[in-house]
Length: 63
Image 1 (tube, rainbow, N blue to C red):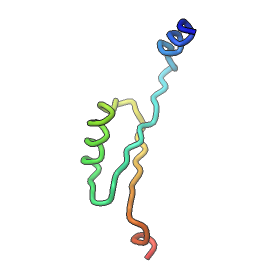
Image 2 (image 1 turned 90 degrees about the horizontal axis):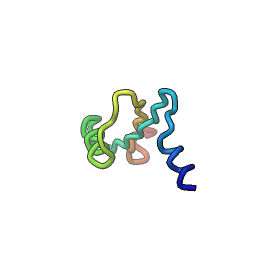
Image 3 (image 1 turned 180 degrees about the horizontal axis):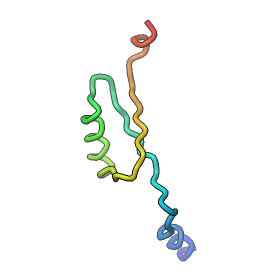
Image 4 (image 1 turned 180 degrees about the vertical axis):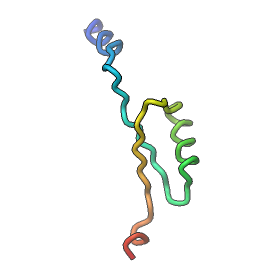
């Protein structure tokens, strides 16, 4: 089992770069949300694709 786990951890994925999900709350700028994400998860690599999720209070967008 240990060898299988080590093989998975060292495996390369042919240029695969995972998506990075950044949560941006209402009243927070993109830069602030990115800085908060990096403070918790570490720096975002240049090859990563970013999925930005914006959280707003209900009712404001559809009113």
